[in-house]
Length: 220
Image (cartoon, rainbow, N blue to C red; front, side, top):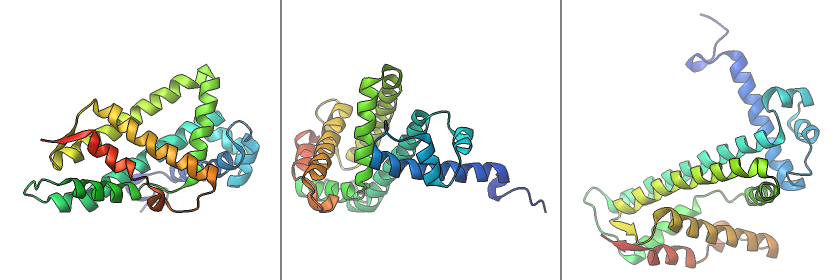
């Protein structure tokens, strides 16, 4: 038996490199949230991860590349959480008979699904930081827009499929509707940070979020 490979035939060096990248991403998350993207240095991120500056540049060409990798990781995680919420709360409620949900069912189900989303306030800080950076730097803004568009496209596909299973549909452009709902959530998180509101995401969730979803959808 060869000792130079791990499970799924992943080479040892590749697995080690992946662990290094993961530690750098985790460290960057903390440093970006604490210091801001602009102020955070490569040296600080590398030191927080337990590596040298050379190790950083062996994995990422710049802070910006690191940040986009971090955003991609968070995007995948949030979409997985949404899928998990749909499977955990919506699918059993609808069942195999395609039962039509009433408004109360929709509000309750949407609220429970949203509660599964990450309640990590660092992410709201980091997103705000990078948005400002992208607004100021045209070289970054195009990539930032592409990332956002890709995220909302994937998010919209999942939401539309969930609504269809509940026999509902958006009355306006689906992606625009999803962006409206996401903006409400983002504004709520920003207000919580500004006011020092220590309640959980579930406790702070505005009643307007599921209400807006109802207002933007109809039964089919």
